[in-house]
Image (tube, rainbow, N blue to C red; front, side):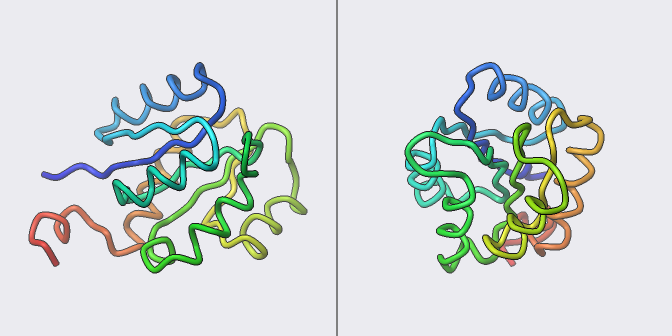
Length: 137
C-alpha cells in the first residue's frame, strides 16, 4: 500500500516534530517547511497529497499561502487544513475556508484522533485514495 504524503508548514520546530511523529505513527509520509515561502516551494517540488498549514507563519501568512496554493492547478485538488492556536472561532474558520479556500480549519491544541480522522476524510474526498495512487489512476 502506498502511503500519503503530508506537508506540514509550521514555524515552531517542536510543533513540527509533534505533527511529524503523530502522522508517521499513522502511516503518513511527512515533509516539513518552516515558513510560507518554503512551504510553497516544497509543495511545488514534491506535490504532497495534503497540506497541514499553520495560520501564523513568518514571511507569508498562512491564509495567504492557502489562497496562493489554491490558485494552482494541483493546489485546487490538494486538501489544505489551516490550523491555529491564536485564531479561534467561527469568524476565522469562515475566513480560512470561504475567503482563502481551506478545506478545513482546526483550532490548536487538537486531539490527534480528530486530526487523523480529518486527514483521512479529506484524502478520501479528494479522490486521492491509496488504490488510485497504486494503480496510477
